[in-house]
Image (cartoon, rainbow, N blue to C red; front, side, top):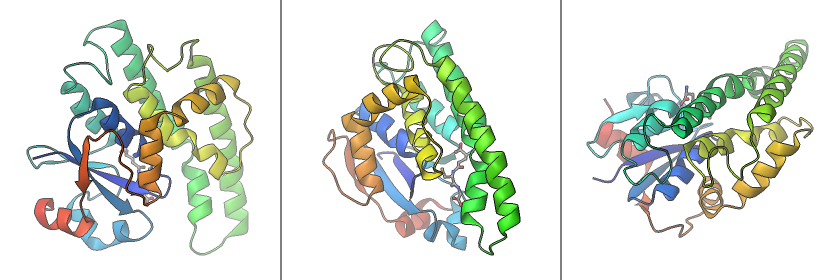
Length: 232
Ligand SMILES: N[C@@H](CCC(=O)N[C@@H](CS)C(=O)NCC(=O)O)C(=O)O
C-alpha cells in the first residue's frame, strides 16, 4: 500500500513532511486532520494517544508518530537521496542537527504562545505572562537559528531536504503570533522555500484545496476511514 501521511490544519508543522513527500516523488496519500475539531474526538487517540499530528501510516500499515521518526522513516527509504544525504556524510550530520534544533527548542519555544492563544477560559494576566515568556523564547531561538543558516540557497546543500521541510512548517508561526521579523537570512530562505512548488502544494492542501502537485500524491483519505482501518 501507499503510505498515508496525516497532516494537521490549521498551520500544522506537518506541512513540511507533505513537501518532503512531494520532493521524494514516490506514491503516497494524504489525510487532512482538523486539529481544532476531529483530532480532539476520542477516536483519534486510536491512532495517536498523544493526540497530535503528524502521523504516518507506513506502507506496511503500521502507525508511526513523531515528526523525527517519520522523517527517519523517509530518510531510510530515500535511496536516490532526493531529500537527504548519504549516511555518515557531513551533510547528513548537519541536516540531522538542524532538524533536531527545529523540532525541539525552536518549535517548543512557541508553546506558551499557543497556550495563551488557545486558552478556553480567558485569564488576561496569565495570558500576558505566557505571551511575554513565549515571545522572549521565540526571539532567542530565531536569533540562534539565524546564525545556523549558511550562505547556500537551502539549509544544507543545493536542494531542499527534510531539514528545509521541517523548518518550513514552523517558520511561518512567527507571523501568527505577531512577532516582528528581524532575521534577514531566515527571511531570504523563506522567500525561496515558500515559492517552491512542493511547499505551494502543501500550503494548498492545508487550505483545503486538491492541487495537482508533482503527481506523487495518489489521493486523500477521510480520517474516519483511516481510524477504522489502522487504529488500535
Ligand atoms: N513531538 C511531536 C509534536 C507534534 C505537535 O506538536 N503537533 C501539533 C501540531 S503542529 C499538535 O498536534 N498539537 C496538538 C493540538 O493542536 O491540540 C512531533 O514532533 O511530531
